[in-house]
Length: 187
Image: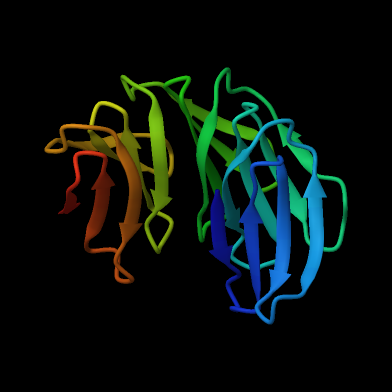
């Protein structure tokens, strides 16, 4: 359901329909399996230093995992599917949920803020390379930009269906959004 390359390029983290997160070396050797979610894992993201992972699940939870350890920290608060997670270069975690919220968490798992101005199910979140802006994509086709403190900066309209994926350019000057309306928009 999700696959991400570690910051150093040596491992893959894979979210699975079985509720597990699998770690693989790029040579195909499985390194570790994290168990704990009770429904499919929707999204996985690496911490900038590559020592931790965050996962979001259809069970409504977010979990932080430490590479080499088995138990994960459970971050509760969403009341519906967590479809996407993102870990910023400033060590903030964002989780996007169908409960129409985005939650911002510290790397230790404490809740920083709940963003409720989304107006619809949130399908995607992605931090800018410098960790100062968070982009979110929603069921209503809107892309929203937020400061790291949770302040809404802009609402970008143009898609006619849900925004399911987001990607920033390496310099943070351009944001790409992908939608079920069969378009990609550059902002």
